Length: 231
Image (cartoon, rainbow, N blue to C red; front, side, top):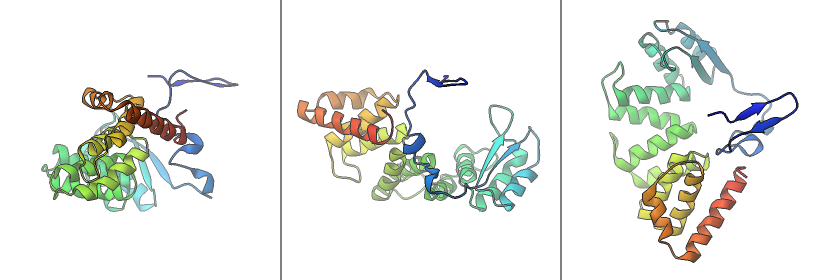
């Protein structure tokens, strides 16, 4: 829904922004002298991928494709997206993973999906880090590797991704790749809950904790959200 309105003299918020933002965002430009190049490309169904290739060749680090059909790209641009992915553009690598996961224009391949996810995750893309962590936790197309999954999952959670925060709560609740800690699980569940993600099973786990652990988890979650700029 609408977050708020910007008037001539003020900004009015209707809803809380649950992700880190402004000076406390993971994207902090204060130490940068220049920003990476991001190209915005207007396309239509059936358009060629020439502009996508050109953006990749000219050094774009990110590409925003403004397209028709609920944001879906055309099959005629698929090879250009692969080209951009091979050039190291993270969002294109993430798109390639989705194509292989869904079998959209390619043969479905969990192995190829995992390979492209790993590339985007290595570049710090939160959604890719979360998805890659899930692939490693479940062994989807790749060898199951719980210890390897945890740093990616934690990185996505620290960037404010509620789904990653909730999965991290399960990891600590069950002791998957980490030392089991119901209190740490409760902390991450409360953070994810504040981000709008529902999970009755985890909520029940929190309510069953001793009162002292509940209060400690609540305090830790509040402190994390404050450091993240959510208060």
